[in-house]
Length: 93
Image 1: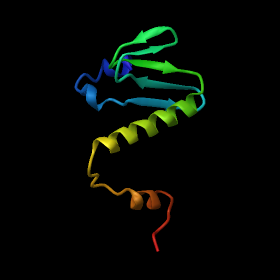
Image 2: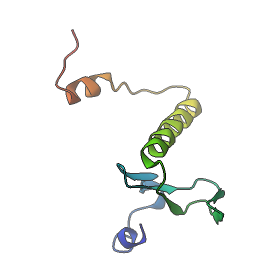
Image 3: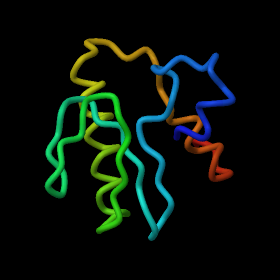
Image 4: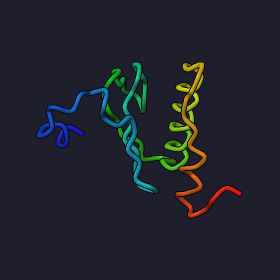
């Protein structure tokens, strides 16, 4: 992340990804609060790498984040059903 951010200083920190997942290999996650991970403290706002059970961990983290955002919002004006159907070449009846 540091290598990517260095030549792109105009990208605001809140516009950077919270998670980068490479299937079966690793997962880079941004900590939203101070965490204890593998015996070390990860400070809020910093990135750390997971290499164990990365596929399950990445899916769980994304689902948790979506749930947090949904709970924080009383009204979501978006409906992604049509996008999902078009993505797979389907149409609603």
